[in-house]
Length: 322
Ligand code: AVJ
Figure 1: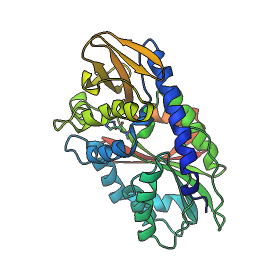
Figure 2: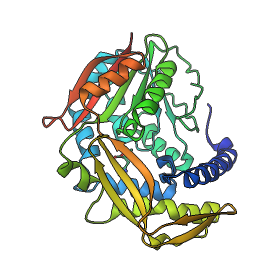
Figure 3: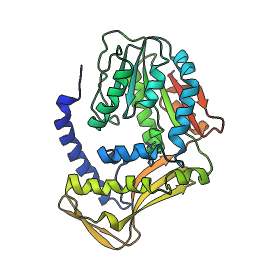
Figure 4: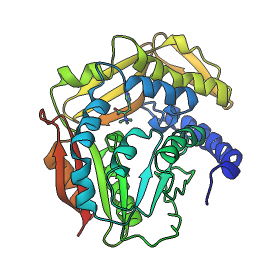
């Protein structure tokens, strides 16, 4: 088994150096930014779990509802003997709903950068499906990764990518990511994709600016992580959380706004902020079904089936290879 345990120290060293590189590059850009994948350290992963419970955050609840209603139908569409690959796993609830319905899956391959969080959620899957072969990969799924070989040959590979994480990627990058999943899935492979849909900003915006301030803490945790892991010299309280709906781009933008003119120091470099200057920390695109079908087509997929909730807020889509 390709267990992550042995590789963890090396993997996290690797992670630190790319965190530093990405922070330095991002803060040097005219519009300052830090990639959202760095939200998910131990504290960030827990804060995200709390976001999923918030009344305003409809995303997880709606997707879970679709999976509860239609996992049997999805399993039927996928067929027996699949190897299930989950990039960015970290929470077992969704995969469990699918695994419970799949007919004789040959294995489960979780792919996750946050090693410890993955291992914890893996235990839940292991307990529920003791006979399932689990082949974890500790890697960044946005870069190409090797799929481990299962003991039994699969009928097909199925990439399961729930949670609307695709929405973090601007259209061009989203197509690139879909292309890499197309590659990972291989001939006869498929992608089961969870995607949040475009809807009224009155519904979307509060999901990223909740009244309890959990999303604000999640966003500011990035600064805390920079202090702890990179020795950044900054005051996290001198930045405030901001969520903006950008209608033209059909996306939520999360910002950390500098409350005053200030200088912060990271990795031996100084970065000047004007008062009210933002760091962009996340885009969360809300694509229409048509737009998603367009992106899928560009990546070589065909939309075979779509499951949604009654309000059509969220979709789970089965993309197959042409
Ligand atoms: C995990 C990327 C789907 O964009 O809704 C939640 C992350 N950010 N609240 C999303 C997130 C702020 C989330 N995804």
